[in-house]
Length: 374
Ligand SMILES: *Cc1c(COP(=O)(O)O)cnc(C)c1O
Image (cartoon, rainbow, N blue to C red; front, side, top):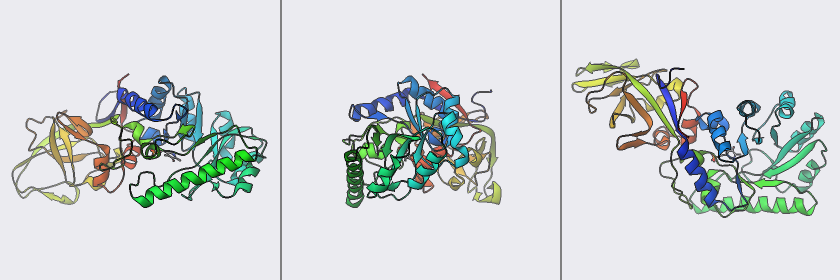
């Protein structure tokens, strides 16, 4: 394949290692990282990232779907792969064939999985207040009955915090309430003889804001990639994380734009003065939000170049008047460093009213993923 062609992702695996070590230092020794590598490892490329993590001694992973689990098996991942969400009954045989661990989204789902006759590893989801998945934490009797399903080997019990990233007192109070509910359910189950399972509850912000919790696994996603959801996020642990991903493209064509002339679909930008513009070979089909049209900037040869006009499916237009001597083929940085300037995924997110997780996880399949360090 033609490396670093029209648009690509560079992965700094040294930074991934660095972030993993930061989390391992922060977590209690008894807690193991179980990285979230769903959505193609938040756009980074699941096979490359999972293999790199496995080389660092990590054996447990979370994904969202059977297909993502199979992709990891095909990439040679041999450890535990937990599917965090729903698997349709017609795919139950794949769970067994690829040794995937399935989340029990509630009691009825557990029964259906048991009745498939397949012998499977499962984790029980407990709803402590997010009300997305899981059997309610107070339904101890119903939860206990899941242990009667002989075909299900229950290796884990987990819940999920829904205000862990919040800094307000009510966010914190809610998180503490969820933690207390989860602990109470786990204790009640153990008191009833249900045992031999691991526990987990924290994602990135669960660890960063509640680092003292003592569960067996931490399902860390976004922060392991060295990104924060929002540029203003501050956390209790305040780890010095380093971004793993850079998003880059190339200048295709440089032009003069005269005063009064407009540019791009719908002619939404008009030159007020003599300008130099350039077309860049990346667009919204690659995951650059169309909402960045006429907003924000990219970096060219270390200088900021504003995005002008509407972002197209495969291309976008920039003002390079402030970045002299721009030539076709020059590198354009959309996320990452160029000279002294840097753009974080969370900044693109902030400008388009979303979080870095969405920006990264939507980076497209046309982008080559290239590891820059090992
Ligand atoms: C995606 C996901 C995670 C990882 O979340 P981050 O905030 O990216 O660390 C953890 N747990 C569950 C249930 C998830 O769906």
